Length: 523
View 1 (cartoon, one colour):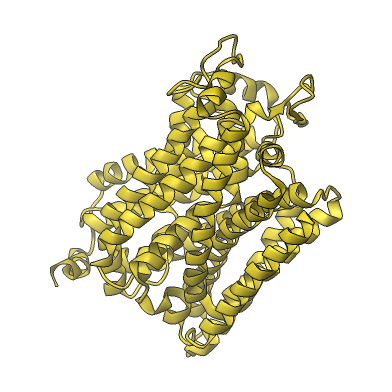
View 2: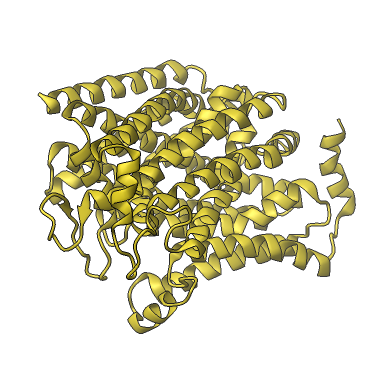
């Protein structure tokens, strides 16, 4: 009966998505319509699009499980950081200037912004390649989280079923994005966002209620020893505040330099909508992210590593010696939720993930078409460009599906390397470029090289398990340098430092061009 209800809810949800795709397909005739919704999207749709692109199965399944286990209820600080730094401050600082400058320049993608802001085709090509390559592991991590949720809901364990779930999700995403472009994703994101808000609230309530209420759950959590100490998992800052801060930086500051996130500011209807959108987006992040990490903070009450407690789900230890973090939230949900709510949770995570997937594939396909393919094809009509984007959406999904088939990395690892590389390369140049005429092309290029170079170096040293002794030594430091999360956070901070530093020692060559670019703020 429960399975039938869950399947029924999924069918209704998918039908609504497809219907919106068909409805909006008539509006996606030009490149501007397909990529930006005609730059006519209101504050509510934009704020929900921002939030649902921000949070997916990666956060709900991967990050909430891992960081809840490691930091207890203090993991909720990550959700607070996501709301204040990743949402509110990002909208206030970046929103208005991004909208004005990108519209004035006619930029539809982040690589195109780099080209037109610094008058450099080389920067555009480099940025486009970085976007395409490093969005793929993030997409694969979303598929991984989705498949685990479906395994929990329908008790599916076979490798073939795992692959089938990934393929079906990719096909569904492709259909409605290919049909309606940004307009379809924005409307769907609004509906998906409502599902996420209701679902998270219900899930957190049920999990805490299952443990006898909040005070009792905190008391039980405090009895669990971490590094020989009790009353750390239920404390305000948890057992490891320094590394928790690294998670806050990666997941909050990262949004400032991610192309699929700042792209939302390109498409908003007017500067007047920015303030309202900031409030809505912040509230959304506080509920969804705060609720997800708070839920994860109690996962030790539902899971065990050694199988000694028959009342808890036994979590496997992987070949790398780490717990299977990605299995913790599904195990928690299976224990805490009544059967009828399982269907809501499946739709919740499906909503969160489909919205993120649609944003990722649209960003990647538009980047390839506008920034790499169009310059090579003279006299290409708008209609033909839209067709090319639709084909590339399918190509991007095929590549990410192939990577997702190989479950060699955890959800959090895939996302951390993706965010670390993208925001590590783009954060400083993008933000400073909106405010300062003194940012040089050399500084932008240096940030690109540093962000990607450090990410690849960290992957080589620690990501593949080739140097176990080095990894062990790096992990034993107060700030775990073997962690891709901390590596990504460091890349972002270095980007903010290196851009003004290099700009101070180099010169802007075409000052007249830069003055013309900044005239948009005076109009």
